Amino acid sequence: MRDVTRKINTHRTAIAKAMVRVSPPTIDLIKENKTPKPDVLQTARVAGIQAAKNTSQIIPYCHPLPITHAQVDFVMDEDVIEITCQVKAIYKTGVEMEALTGASVAALTIYDMVKAVDDLLAIESVRLLKKTGGKSSFKKPAAGEEKRKAVVIVMSDSVSAGKTEDISGKLIVERLEEEGLEVIALKTLPDEESAIFPVVISYADETKVDLIITTGGTGISPRDTTTEAISRLIERELPGVTEAMRAYGQERNPYAMLSRSCAGVRNKTIIISLPGSTGGVQDGMDAIFPAVFHSFSMLAGEGHSQNKNREKTAT
Image (cartoon, rainbow, N blue to C red; front, side):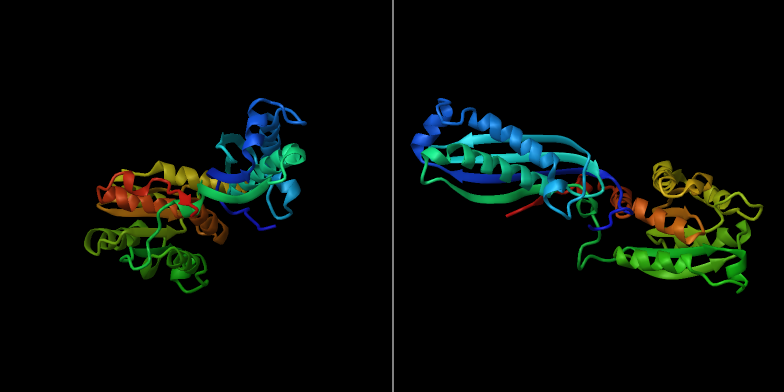
């Protein structure tokens, strides 16, 4: 089973369709409820919903999911029954297998209930129509698109003095590059406002980078001053960003509640402060990417229409 522990919960949907070919007389029998096994469509609906809810018990590598909605509908033509199964959940992984399983089992149930009266019976197809949710539904830089520029700043007295090695900053750089950003600088500074101010101002006001991420200095020790410095530099706060990071981290580490990470906007630069620990950095990045890319579109005045959750449509 694939490990989805680090993924965030998002609203997931999927719709699948199955096609059952029958002879015209069978359609009449179903409509008139005169098949040997009665209530064909109602029975198939219940079977499909039950199958969708129990997919993980049928297909070994599927995760158990907290399904919030499952629906099976039918459209009958003169010689075909179209079955659609829609499934929804708020979870870390998608529900396309649940929708496909629901549609498949509904089709099999129809097959079982009318096979005695129809020699032409056939399940012709089962396919995914569309799915939404998950990281793939949030806009990331497209191939060939000009890369957003980012700067990573490590706030650490010991690292800046050469006493310890920087690990967290390098992790951030690696993750940003994986997300399609161009990291133009990795800076190391002592955790002092006098050192932080000119560097952040330079990259936000003069270089005009899209994103500045700092790591370190967000705790409550006497030398943790990053939060105060960044708070004075930003013009508009983004409290939801840090709320998301702390909520995500708290589910994995009870010490996450002690983080004083902050986030906001200066000019058109997003500034986000992360903890100094490697675990805090990884949790923070997992919590906000790729959804944070939407902020760039908002700053550019594109509004929300450019980054609506995109549906993946199967063809």
